[in-house]
Image 1 (cartoon, rainbow, N blue to C red):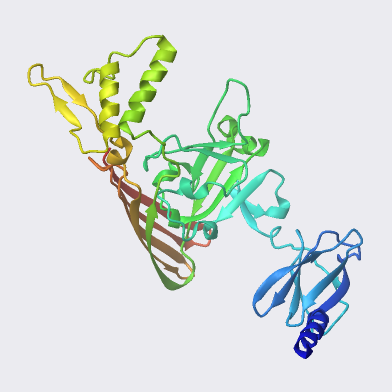
Image 2 (cartoon, helix red, strand yellow):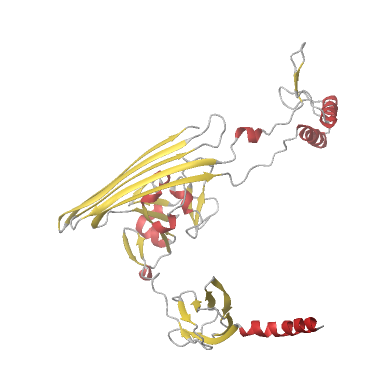
Length: 403
């Protein structure tokens, strides 16, 4: 009985002890003008990582229960700089968040020049080379999918040489269609032939401001692709290697059981045409007797001959089951890629030389459609006089694809 009472006492004290481990913290979040911020996300930092906290209410106030080992509160809000506050035994934390101006200071490509995002009057979106790093892609378009709002990429088919159509803002008129104007360093080009590692920025101009620069050709929007340049300073050498395993996103689910297929074929034919089928194709005849024999062999549970040929007529009869899709297509393919670039420059000259080799196995098991590509780019500039700069940008691509 004494042990029983000890356990009851321990069970009663334990919740009080656990509650004492949590620290209740209250506070208020405002902006630079002192206005309350609603919906500010507050996360709790602990030695084991971040854990969920709370959000501020309509008055910018919050209450959060932090564990005893919590070290910091992290405040985040769209358009504001993230803010971190140490707890250190504090029960009240009031913070003032500052506006984030880094995005507005970002330099974007517009037409034939650049300007700060804060000064852009047209609808412009842009990504940089950081968004494309470490992505195993056959061509640039694969890496752009899902990165730029309002940019619709239609891949047509799965061939690695396919140059997809670029569409901005969807269908713009009834019965009319058009693809966006794609400019690579100011010239029309095929983005599927570019080395993705050479990309500096990709911008899309989405409104009438593009037509004011490029005329009627820019009615359906403009995609501006710029490649990297050599930077002044010491020479830099970069090498990367990538190995990827790829598999189809979707596969058709065919009926591979021969008897089940034959039975469904007969039922659908009778329901559709009102008559029993006479042939499966030009080679295989079909009848109720064939279907009954196929069923007998299938349900016998014993090994049987799947192929029979009439010695008198040479007629071919098949009682087997074959997954033809599996016989023709691989479950996955492998891709291997090597990249190297050398860049540098002085006060009066810059240079960049890059190379890429990509090899991707085909999806077919027979007469496979292997793909390989080699890219070489050489770009440089020399300041001959303070008023004259000579630039060169050469891109050479070799694509081998057997289909």
